[in-house]
Length: 251
Image (cartoon, rainbow, N blue to C red; front, top):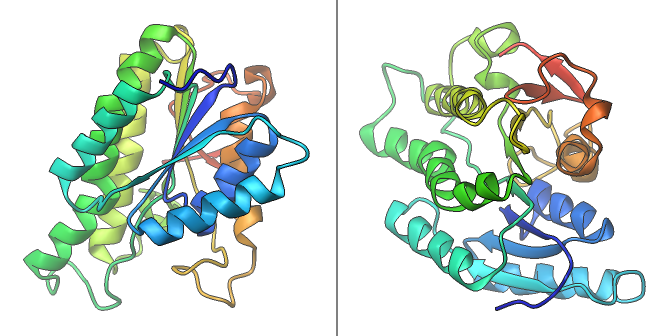
């Protein structure tokens, strides 16, 4: 068991991009980290970089790495159960992993394989990680879950234009999961908060090098939701929402 008195944050997709920047921001705020990603070498590299960066300012930082192919629901559940059994109950879980669907994947042209691949990674694994790890957070009455969604998954605004069907629909599913879970757990009244964010077009492997904002900028709202005083949210309903640049946007 990890005996560190520091709070624990679980971050999926933590080896690069938005997940790495989320983990970095949480480490800077005093959290230990449990990083989940597919590539063991990438995870080890991320761990080494974070430990090096925070060696002076966060000398007690503890980081564990958990390789997992999140397309495989059985593996996802096994890794989540291992984290649950070996580490303290997390105070924060940021789910930042995801894949884009093929460019021509319109509803009537998408293959079963492409649909299943995107849904497994973007939605099924999110359900499984939440299903295994969030119950202890709710029981502790001290937990925050932040899930990276996308503006393309909205049912209003840019999310209803069509195209990229598996991706858009998987992110709409994430939004529905967040809203449903928030209502099931008392909309924050029990000390548990769950929200989705639109990081906007960021410079990541998915977003490409020409995206207008950095991955660090894309992760800022997730870090804020995970760590800031709830009073800063300034909304009548403080959780179960979709956020963009620290503001609530319609699902």
